[in-house]
Image (cartoon, rainbow, N blue to C red; front, side, top):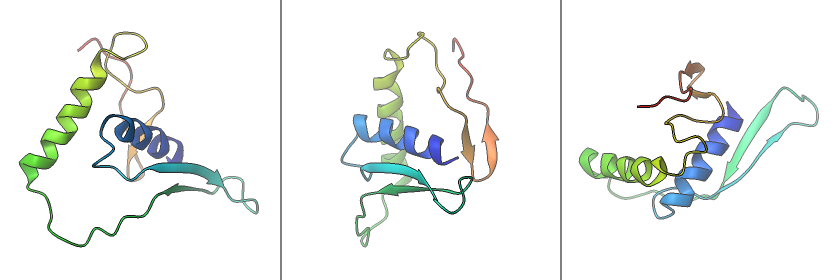
Amino acid sequence: MMEASFESESIFYQYCPDHIPKPVARVNYESDLLMWFYLCYFYDMAGEVPEPKEFVLVVVQIQKSRMDKSPNGEYGFHVPTHLSNLPNSNTWQKS
């Protein structure tokens, strides 16, 4: 899950750095090699919450600008992603 978080946030940051905290690393604990954590820059997010439409437009912008940069011309992701502890199906698709 930490690999997917780091990889996806890195891509979001590449295409939209004004809206994503800069990812730094994903690292495992020395004392437990199965336990990982993810680091990114900290931003004080006090203030107003963006309108849902504004937020969705940022996500759409990132997805559209990334479509033609797929390594195989399809939509998907190179590592499994998760919603909390539930894996998402993100295998490569033609549409």
